[in-house]
Image (cartoon, rainbow, N blue to C red):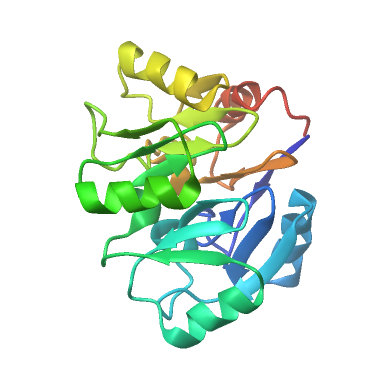
Amino acid sequence: MLIDKLTIKSSPFIGVFSAVTDSIALVPKDISKKELKKIETFDVEIIKATVADSSLFGVMLRGIGNKFVAPDLMSNEELDFFRSKGIEILTLGNKAYGNLIALNNSGGIASNIITKKEFDEIKNFFGLKKFLHQSFSCTDLVGSSLVVSEKGFIVNPNIDNKEFQILKRLFNVNGQPCTANYGDVFVANDILANSNAVFVGSYTTPKEIIRINDAFGGAEK
């Protein structure tokens, strides 16, 4: 499995401008050919689109497979386009759900910022038996603080050990507390990962890459 550096829209904050699962990669319409060539390494269908008339896929959306939860800020045209591509969208309130949710096929976690009603709808939509409704001791932005795949996870290094062990059991994979992009604790801004590849923002240091590599089972650059 590959690990490499990437920019999207010439930005190192690749997790802000894309959302990747084991089925789909959502990317901006104006992504460069060079950046798109690297995205192809995820070995999934690549879809150029917008969300709420923006390119903030990682901020707005969170999903697994072809299912995503999104804010109700999306236009009918955007929703119709996603559905035409076989993507199932659950629209809820006006929150940035990508910043508030993290999940893989084994389990998920939703921030306390999300209401109980929203939490129940999200849990039913993804059909996850293990789905926690809690924040970390260090932040409510659990989606921004976690990058999860079927191979491993990276989490905000300010998490305490008890919470870290809970995440290992929840996602049923090993992980690492680590920063990316030269010290950013909100790692979902900086990393894209699925079962086939891992990309990190262009400011990520060699030391950070080693830890991220270990977290996802020893990807090879």
